[in-house]
Image 1 (cartoon, rainbow, N blue to C red):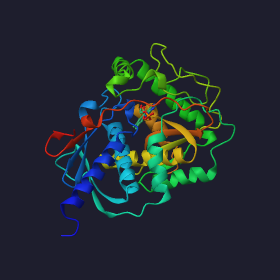
Image 2: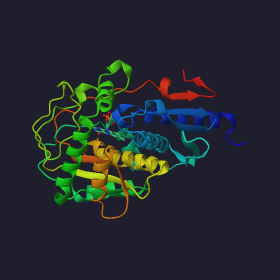
Image 3: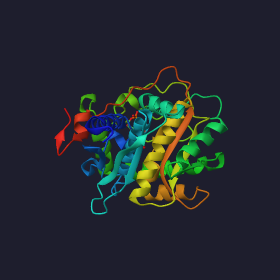
Image 4: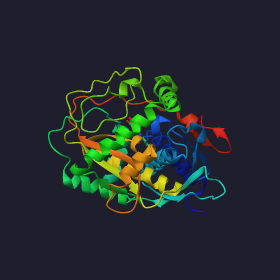
Length: 336
Ligand SMILES: Cc1cc2nc3c(=O)[nH]c(=O)nc-3n(C[C@H](O)[C@H](O)[C@H](O)COP(=O)(O)O)c2cc1C
């Protein structure tokens, strides 16, 4: 048989490299709620429910969106390695934790966009500082981001200037409800005080104290601790994008996550800085308000904010779990 065992081993090596690249994906509170299992020439993606943040994500929607982002990162890495990924999403109705199964369908002709996306996996970071840009995100860039989302089975809604006040109201409503919820405070505290060595959570040096800006962001600085200088921006030209889907089931959440990754990587390649906002989709009333902003029927899954990247320094990178904790090889054997 052409290729034989050597070729199969090569594919397994590439799949493993893809799972490693997926570790850089964004996730809710940097929980990295995924586990990969590599068996022969198949790579399975599992949701890790024990990493769900109960107070803000009782259904596991944001957990599944996060896993979708990891899946897209893995697809990008495989394509950039010259291999066409074949993905079956939610392949086993009896096992809802098995979110996707990926294999190599054959060779893939590597395009410049594949290389750009792969490079952006290493460069992308949440930048929560107010953007100092003095001009808006160009229209053709926004069109490219919209195409990236559509390509993943989701879509983007550009929040127009006349809708900003509603986004602010949604954020304020979410903050007020969550601010009174002890379980929320305790979850936020736990996931922002992990320490770098833990390889997870949102480190204080990646968040900024509340500053004057058009649309306030989630306040991560519970006890005032934040080490990242906000700089001189005011978010005047920030563009807010709602990632939305036609349906609101686990498969839609997974696809929304793939779209989040596709959009964020495309934005990074095009010189944008950005961060995500999920407080406005965590609280049902705020999410309903966002639903009303959409110009067609759909479900908001996440808000992304982008601006031209004009800061002199990049924000620090957040830690990640070692591959041995997230990738299993064979039947239960952790990777060396
Ligand atoms: C589903 C989802 C929800 C998120 N919600 C927020 C949020 O509300 N506020 C925020 O600043 N970042 C949010 N993020 C970004 C994560 O906090 C971030 O990806 C993670 O801490 C890792 O940092 P990095 O993006 O710099 O790699 C979210 C990301 C995902 C995928």
